[in-house]
Amino acid sequence: MTHDRLDESLSIIRWMPNTLARCFGCDVLLVDAWLSGEIEIPAKAGAWVEVLAQAHQAAETVKPKGHIGKKFDA
Image 1: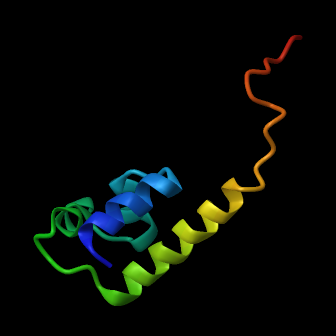
Image 2: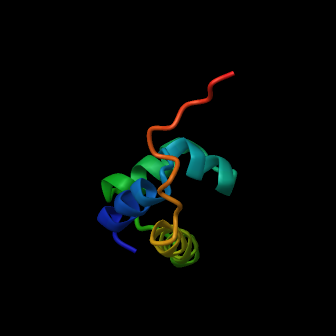
């Protein structure tokens, strides 16, 4: 996975870098280094994030739209 694809994937999943760091139990600075391209993203980490991004993209196609703009009136 490239650093650009990691950034795109986090956007698709709606995660910030600190969320990914918490999932992996690592320091957010490590995730930041991946995102900047400073260091290579481990293959297993990239594959895991890619699967999540693909699942989120697929789920978007069936997300119910009938709730857009609705409010709760108590």
